[in-house]
Length: 106
Image 1: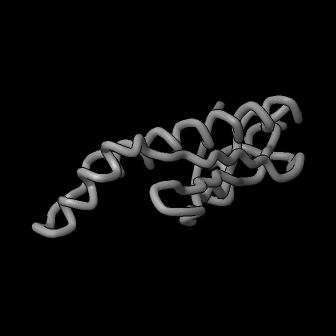
Image 2 (image 1 turned 180 degrees about the vertical axis):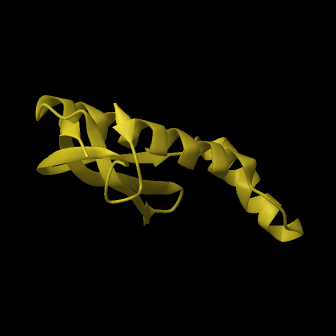
């Protein structure tokens, strides 16, 4: 499935099928969360949270692609990501865009 963050597919005619979205709430292991808290004292990247959010984006993207596929889409355009803290150590990540079918050359 083609994923683009622009609102069109260069050189193609498309038919909009509807919005496709996927979301996940991801958390970190308590022990890793404690170590991340310690990292805030000295500064720098908190790798365990970077990994958590990367994994969450992958899951949310897969769910969005699955939903678009169920609509009969060839692509999702205007792909965006949103995230929010749900609770200490947990974040929701949502991927969304417009599911489209390629109808010809443009």
